[in-house]
Image (cartoon, rainbow, N blue to C red):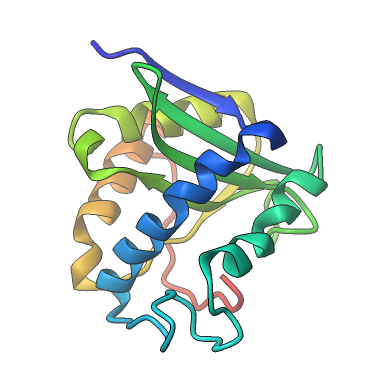
Length: 168
């Protein structure tokens, strides 16, 4: 078994998540049929001409301590992904927590790492959760991961809704 770690990412290490984030957006682009803007950045807004400009938007995750929780995932001490957990005022509906972003690098997928990470986060934060996935045919692996993990973790005691979330 690999050594998997899920730990709150300190500001001094946020550059690691910044390095991973464009890979996450590239994956999402394939699921959502999106193209990069004219500068090669996966953003609809043309104001983002560089990754540096895009990444500064996520500084909020390190500015709202105790409200927003950016976790770095490592496997055998190598960066393997991230998971961002939000609390009210940054959640939708009547829930305590929301997974805003979740990403595992491709070399680490299909090995139980995603399910482990999700379970660890759920163990850290007890309450009512919401998560969002892009409900497209191209996202079946992610949806399958969530259904399998939630079924095991909750003993099949979860609800699934197909609703539109704006600003996600």
